[in-house]
Length: 303
Ligand code: SF4
Image 1 (cartoon, rainbow, N blue to C red):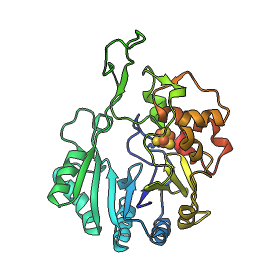
Image 2: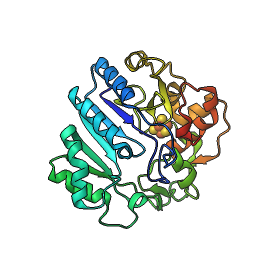
Image 3: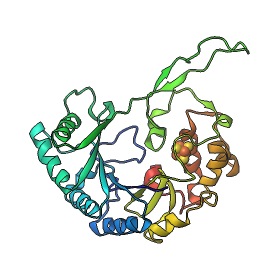
């Protein structure tokens, strides 16, 4: 059941991280207007099962007045409201309270803050920790998101197998290999044979519990896999009509993961990929021209 709408309020970001799913950067286009936010919220009410509205990006606080008003309007409709941010624009603990208090008064209930080496290097006290402390002071439920760069670890079971072969090294860290991360983080990592990548391990494509919506209208089930465009068909109708087995990309992934998608779409895979998402994203990027309504936007594919 769909219970969450996640606004990609903007693709613009003050950072340009290697692990970003969405190719966000300071020059990225695609930011909501307040009237577009209203359209999404009206449609979210019509769906009838939505509990949470999240604001993400890019960095949503780059457009602070829009973010503030969007939180206020979401909360006034009775939704719980979350924010995912790198806490841009904070220079001190005192400033963090100035930054956060208006958002709290507008109805923010949950704050998720990126705090890792990609964002703040080795800095122990940084924007994220100051925002985290301010959130606790203001009584806002809060958590940090820490993404570790990938590392190659020895196999858990290093003993010889029946066939006499050693186990394979595994990729540690919690970066996801989609978007820019495919370009920047996969080089030199061990791979698994493409034929073994037969599931989608991270998204419930059959019955998504949340979708991400961008200012171009794309209603994304996973980054770059669209249910349709809500500026063409209202969101509540798209959600009602969504049949995963009729969706040309999701149906294939449900049947047999990226391996099925690649074969079904007549692609020539490489011998191996780091994981399912690496393979899935690579195939999708190859075929996106054939499915402009379902593989969008170009921004998420680095185009
Ligand atoms: S396998 Fe594909 S659809 Fe599933 S989570 Fe990874 S990128 Fe998304």
